[in-house]
Image (cartoon, rainbow over all chains, first blue to last red; front, side, top):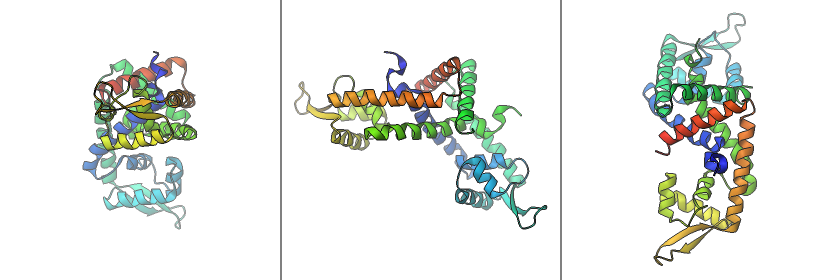
Length: 144
Length: 144
């Protein structure tokens, strides 16, 4: 039987199962920082210059109300602050606080720990090929 | 900046996002068959000889009550039937019906379609390396 002759060996099924596992393991680690995996995309986007809520929502691909919830949660732990746009005082922008920058670095360290735990059965070349494949797939689907 | 210097580029984060996408795309396709992705693991396990509910639950890694729910759903669409174990008449076993075997083949075809849609941005060697990496990861985590 060829390996792909079983639904459970298709890339779709494996991705789904391993995605659930990766998310659960990462979420377990992130709990100590008081955030969930979905907050990480916001933290990443805010490492650069301040951004408007709508820009964050559009880039992440969620509704503005979801971003507002996430920003409220990040504001409660002093990771972000809402500031006035200097070019247009009516406009509100979001920026990371110093604590937010530190939170992002700690989240990245925990994501790498999670990666290491998942990659335990792969050698270096296999891990690199897997990373490349996943990034290409993300570029041609999620990020396109 | 190295690619792994962003949480959103870690294998954990990519797996989580692409897993959600793969599951959603596969579920969309499977809807026409009246089943969800989780039913596929049951269908796969039942391609061989009849099995007990507890054996199915243990192999898939879910509680017996979850397996009972899935079997009830599969029974409603005539994909499985409950039969008496010939070696031990008190024991009930589960087997695929001819319609169940056909359902499994159709689900596999839809999983392959989903794979093709996800692999659009990868060449043949990259797709093969990705498959190998995912299978190894599954073997060392989920299936161990």
